[in-house]
Image 1 (cartoon, rainbow, N blue to C red):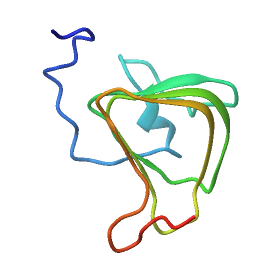
Image 2: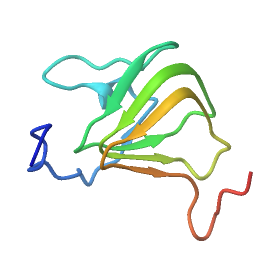
Image 3: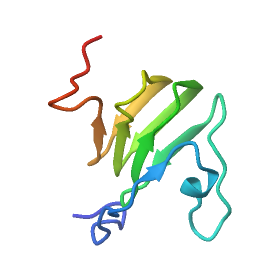
Amino acid sequence: MVLDGDADKETEAKVRKWSDPKSWAKDGKEGKLPVAGESFTIEKEWNMELDLAETPIFNKIEIKGILRFKTSIDVHLHVKKVLIRGGELGIGTASKPYLK
């Protein structure tokens, strides 16, 4: 049973950069970076890279697509709740594992 109507959407090949407001555009609306205290969703078809060293404190992130941390910088994601709903959260790689 599909509850969210997203079963037919595939993850995009291009990588969205968190720091680019255009990466957050959806449903024809102009994108803007999430701000402190907000709750938001990484959509099912999105392939997002967190390319900021530091984020503000968010209330909640729901991950339906892919959220990966950029491996060439030390990334700090501050959030009260993370819900992974059929998506992926990637921190590190086999060649650059997350060790902290």
